[in-house]
Amino acid sequence: MDMGLKGRRALVLGGSRGIGWYTANLLREEGCHVALCARGQAGVDDAVRKLSERGGGQVIGAAVDLADGDATRRFVRETVAALGGLDLLIHNASGFAVDGSEDAWRRGFEVDVMAGVRAVEEALPALKASDAASITFIGSMASKYHFGREPSGYGPLKAAMRTFANEVAQTYGRDGIRANVISPGAVWFPGGAWDQRKQENPKFYAAVEKAIPLGRLGTGEEIARIVVFTASPAGLWLNATHIAADGGQVAAVD
Ligand SMILES: NC(=O)c1ccc[n+]([C@@H]2O[C@H](COP(=O)([O-])OP(=O)(O)OC[C@H]3O[C@@H](n4cnc5c(N)ncnc54)[C@H](OP(=O)(O)O)[C@@H]3O)[C@@H](O)[C@H]2O)c1
Image 1 (cartoon, rainbow, N blue to C red):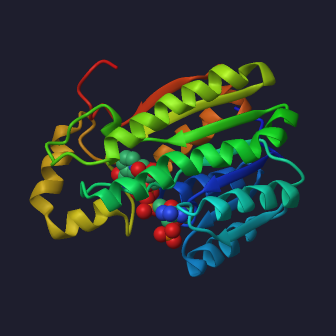
Image 2 (image 1 turned 90 degrees about the horizontal axis):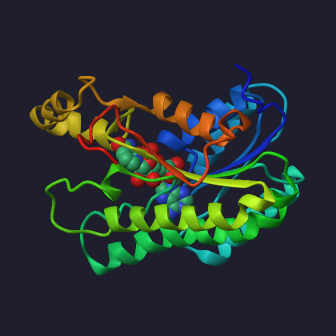
């Protein structure tokens, strides 16, 4: 199937590692021009170098902390100018507000919610001009599932992201802009949080694997395929929706 991505311009917020990286990589494989950001300059440089080795088209990256509103807005504007427009906006980064402190709540709010709000606002004129515009947010099963941890901002802020995505989809659908949320369950990739847990607490990791109907955690590539399909013109009739990409980990009907 041709996903219709050749020559499209994509921006991945938080794209140097993990799910964001696998997504940027697949977008390149499908022929997109790709822009990405992350906080760490070394990770950005490495990602840009690897993506540039994948042939023609533009690859740009910048060290940006998405908790910084002005820097986020500037980066989105600069990306649109450098790519000559924008078709796909993917908000992947999280503040991972998992410890319940006020600082974590605030950081999670800035990164998970406000960076998305700011990026959408700045990208709107370019997305309105695109004939294949989509906005894809990376959420989490935590937006609808209690892990048995102490209360924290992580799940509630991902839930806010879902509501915001619906508002965007309902408002800008008539401008040809779609918005959706993909919520991964537990995802393993080398060097990721679940890789660390696997090494630190193999018993816990094995219990999580056992609780997933497919008998293992998802991979970065598997989530990226769902993200890229949803964001691509091939996923055109997906709009204002939430997709649980969790291998059945949340044992409930949405
Ligand atoms: N992995 C899972 O099991 C899982 C499960 C459910 C949902 N998710 C969701 O999937 C998304 C990606 O998770 P992941 O596990 O792939 O994360 P990750 O491995 O920590 O990678 C996050 C990426 O975003 C960048 N980033 C983080 N904070 C940023 C900030 N403030 N400003 C700019 N860039 C930032 C990171 O680079 P720098 O550190 O250099 O900034 C990195 O490139 C998150 O939204 C997460 O909530 C993941």
